[in-house]
Image 1 (cartoon, rainbow, N blue to C red):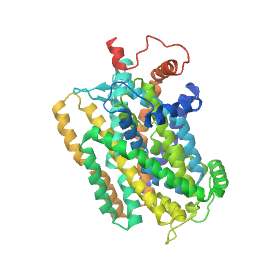
Image 2: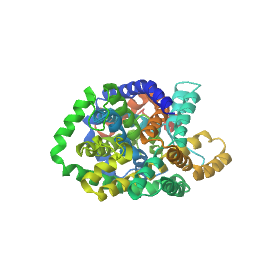
Image 3: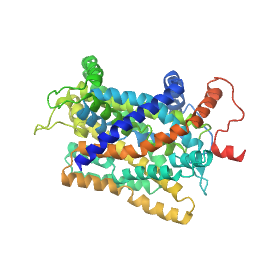
Image 4: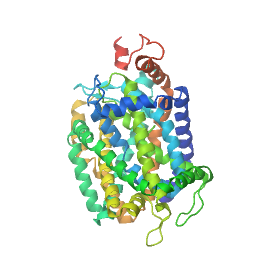
Length: 485
């Protein structure tokens, strides 16, 4: 299994890296570097909304805070802890630089896919609004562009997303962290985690939104605060840490201590792959939950997509990475001389400076990140099922009832198999990268084909809310409005 995953990862890695970077650069350049020039506006319309300074009206299933919290919860997951640690263990400190690069240009990729998901969304028979990649494939490619076989990329995309249903790392990483800290059997932790996720999933997307609205703001603040304390204790090491990150980004990393060293190509591949997994830019996942938000303009919700990437990677992932490098934890090995990786590496970094309290911070954070991500991914699966079964109301209700019960089970099975067969966390994350690539490839190509629609919406948004040029009265902000007119 290891050899197969590594071969596929290398083959797919080069082409995926190229596509991710090229698409991100295209949207960045063509938008006039929007995410940099209007970063203040993005923060005002996103973070400001969370503080209650913005009132948003429009059609939708969830209120803005619930939709955003669910999306951020689905994005800010255990990849921000265990995934970043694995990236450093596999690619060295230089991987962090490429994680940043991918995230900064990925802000525009996420803005585009979220905006398109909101624009092409539709209401079901009960008036609930849903959207996502399969919706803009059907309407954008199928109806507007006359691409009659739109269902092919839609099936490939949906199949790739559902592959993560059978192979999720959330349960595994949470179980690994809790077991390492409290000495509890990983399988027991896995079962408890599974039951908690099931309890939320049984309430469907509305309960998911409420749970995320309560958990996400707290978990982000909790982890950021703890991480900053760990970093500031050794503030004097920061210049050397950042020099190492930038130097290793272009030269690779020579063997240091327990670290085996990483070649330049490996550094880039690991950094980009982890960035995509952590912030999901281009993956096509969080646009599904964003599409349910009550919002007056598609790009207004697209701003939240850009904010997600910034929060997850530029802030949270950076805190994890800098803590690991700044404390020297990345060079350490366990009692058997094996290099630390995954959640244990992040735990070690925090423990070196805060003792057992540091382990508790990482463990509690990993648990909260894992729960919110798992329930966020449940929403993605449900939205895909709703679209697939939209013409059969009775069957849809039956399938959703069953799915809400079984949805957390596969991730528990992964944890059990990993424990029984002794799979190291590096292999678990490697296979996760392979699964990630399939839907990302499809979604990136589709949003490229629909880029004209996104830039039309972006021009309209800039005219309406930034006073740049005049508003075109012929522009319809939602696909359904265009059909009616």
